[in-house]
Image 1 (cartoon, rainbow, N blue to C red):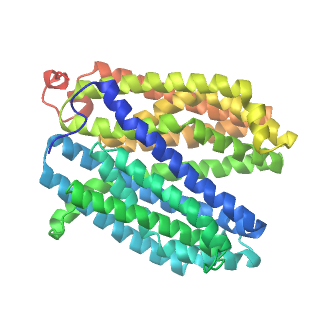
Image 2 (cartoon, rainbow, N blue to C red):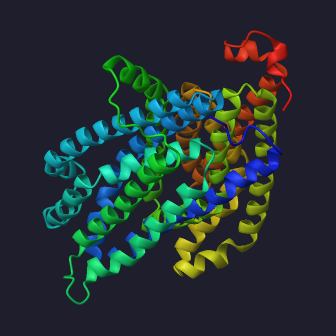
Image 3 (cartoon, rainbow, N blue to C red):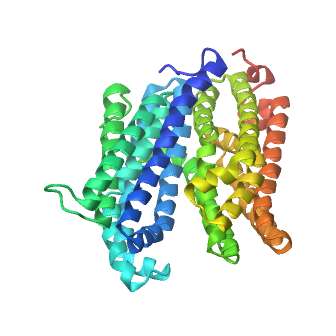
Length: 460
């Protein structure tokens, strides 16, 4: 099986991988924004009910992304090795595992709706709305997890265009279906919050059909012969060796955000609103680094599997300089225009002040954050997820939360946001130093699997 990114010009290959991913990441953000906008038009209770579901949806989404990360890592390396039968088995078994996991989680979710959301603080007037939404969302959860793993398998093959098209189609379908099903039209009844959940399920179903069809009919990576239990367990163990720590890594961020939100709540609802608004703008500003980090995993995985180690090192060098350049440009731009941009969304002076402070201090660490994202993706691609988990724990739990607490006490809101910038900068520096050390050491020492230094420096 021929790898798609183990030959040719490295910057051009990275660009070809990254550009479609930019469109894909933007589509994911558009999907979420459309849901929030249309539900907000129904009423405050409906928006509050959907907001209560965000922690649960985020956690389950983290499971899906972790499985996708594991699948992408092992499949990309298998493709780099050129073993088609192995890649077919890994792809099929990854999809089977995701189906098993989603069946278990959906079943547990359906029977725990009442105690779970009651413990989260949902009041009786919101509970019926939450139940309407989550009963549909849980049933359609298979349409979230399985295609996410399927798209990860497609990307691992070096094709980022098709997954981006699939995500864009899903976002477009959701934007069209949301108003139709929420407010009704013609013979279609107004379903309210149930309509939002149904629109999400139908849109995700499109991604399921599209990704599985492409994997089977175009890439021939899905096989219908059932493996022996031993073979399947081996595949699942490989996937979970990366996927399970990736799930843990993904769960750390919402926990940290929850703590920061509780700190900001002491300064009033306007401070929280400003933080939320700035965070959404931040997500838009970080689309290119996020897209690049997704692409570098594919490039590193295939080239590592093909034993083209100098290409891996060069790609990481280029990625770091791109992240620093992009981060510096965005930081200067936001520092100069933050108040005007915030005013477009919310004219409340206190909200504008809170968001402006965030967008003045934190963006100067975006370059370092990009390095962290790039390094994390590369390590996952190399099958080293525990190091990624360590970076995430260091940045969010060991640095950000303690620094934010002290910063809040000393400098108020500015101290909280300065803590975010410092934690990004310190861990980003650590990631850069790790890379520099890795560049100069024998790959045999670093990987524990290569026979000689000469092999580590094969020609591109």
